Length: 59
Image 1 (cartoon, rainbow, N blue to C red):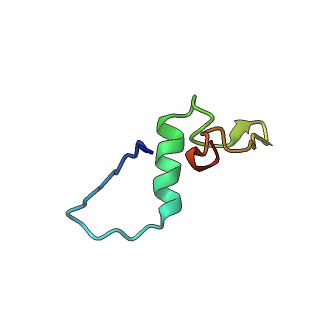
Image 2 (spheres, rainbow, N blue to C red; image 1 turned 120 degrees about the vertical axis):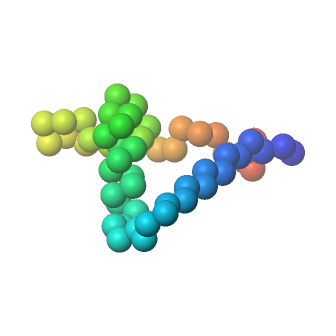
Image 3 (spheres, helix red, strand yellow; image 1 turned 180 degrees about the vertical axis):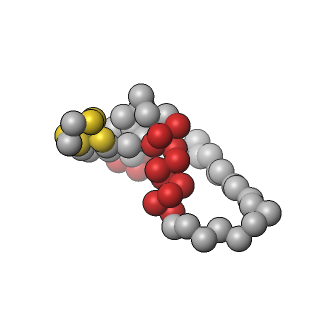
């Protein structure tokens, strides 16, 4: 079985002081129109869903 994966490696020339929530927030703001990146709909509402990516091990 072949699985497609992606590895994202990020490097910095400065020490990183913030937590991973800041990185997640960056992508959520940068790609605000994609609900898969974040779960905030605005006006205090949230979007929660089951995983939509099929699990190849259950196929």
